[in-house]
Image: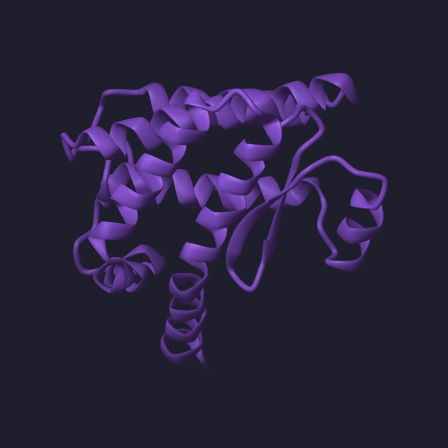
Length: 177
């Protein structure tokens, strides 16, 4: 994504907002702000706890893209002179580079945490989506035409949409008070 792209969190789904004349209005309408970067921490922490130890090429490749994304996001906020955000993004990037698998290990086994609740959600994922995502990212990396890259990304988003709907439904069912 180009510099100026920001993240948006809506209905528990993280998405990207490319720079445009309407980005500010869109962000205002969705109540998006820099505090949404906090949600990245939880995604990174859960990745670390549940997937980092998997020695799978697709996971490693997606991790590489996540690091690239954090670097691009950092460049976006570098231009806005937002030191606190850049430091937060640098921390997230460093966490993804760590090799210590125990960093987010729970100390108390009898305590129910939000992670234990969300651990169930990985059961609804279809492994084929991981490989579709992996291959789409490979194709995007090789593609030189920016318009075609965007079409590949748009296609990937459409492919992932049914899973996102299942995730939202799962969250509503499991997390309802």
